[in-house]
Image (cartoon, rainbow, N blue to C red; front, side, top):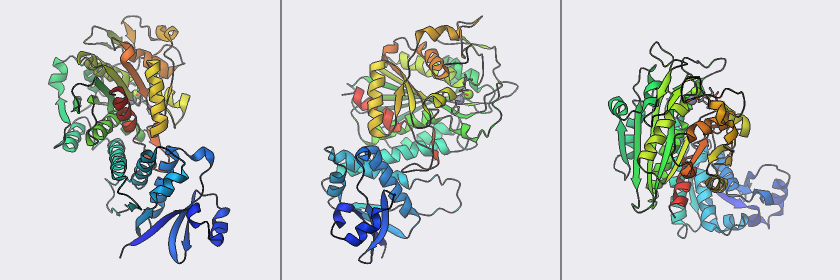
Length: 459
Ligand code: BES
Ligand code: MG
Ligand code: ZN
């Protein structure tokens, strides 16, 4: 017989003074203990300021994680008590958050582990009939995020510009997502010259992937543009002085878009969405683009490559031009774009720029779903920082300030109507520490954010 555990709330054991006094002085949010010889987990009364959905996800993730290495294979919790404890009117949201956190808490990146332990713990609710839909949504959200995490964690020798599209084809085979992969020839004929320039030093050819999901044709077209640099060495402007292994995650934007499309398709959302992924590797080589080179874009604009390490914006430019060509009604691009965004906002909040009203909507969405973003201003006075002596503009600023903003200003020049557009810089939130439903490594940031934003713009 498989071992199981009951998850109880303080309130459910209020008659047991012995256990209550035992857990009273514990700081942890939950305490594994024995009650009448049965092993149980007791959740302490959350403080007023901890009644958020994020706290539910964190709590569920921590409990699942703590059980993952035990012999326990099943856990049971009373959904009504859970909802009551968190004092929420949004009953479904509480269940979704708990399931989402639970499933992600035991996430592990196991591709390269020779021994894989099954560390999943089944979760049962006391009355799960009423919430079967919410439970399903929680699972879908978790698996979309896990997909983003898997892609982001994968190593650059496995996940490169030529294999990444294959992984997507496999993932979306037999689903309603159409995967269209453009190879080097098509990229040339479509004059995606940023992709061609950045990929020149790599042994891999560039790819441009379109992921299309049409749940409702009549809805406005939302284009999600993702930076997919499978490894960023900096190119000829080589990075140095630190362990660069996290630069395999420089495709986190493309992973976010892929996860969002998976989430939307699996939840059969009534949206009309297209993911546009620019996939390259940024390498130094005798064929590499050089500092000082000029890229001429399809829209006629010329860009001086001031620094080959500012490659993200060079390829996103092709994606934004494509989004315009497709007449997208809303455009969001997402990228691990600047160290400056991480310096400005730290590792818990991404930066969002563009249409202020939309940015504020996105901030609200992220505060609820766990993918936090905060607006940064696109200050017109800094436009001149991108001036170039011999091209229309440069890909880097000539001032040592406002790095995240100047990257945003650069991108804004590639959308004909910036009122439709948002730019998310997720450099700071690409990775996470091991806590709650996060494990050390890729966060899976952006899948929920982009999916929920797409749904909001389709209402
Ligand atoms: N991929 C990096 C940004 C990054 C750094 C993401 C650390 C995650 C963690 C990006 O391509 C880059 O190199 N940006 C430069 C831009 C600079 C040369 C203008 C940066 O931020 O230093
Ligand atoms: Mg770079
Ligand atoms: Zn980069």
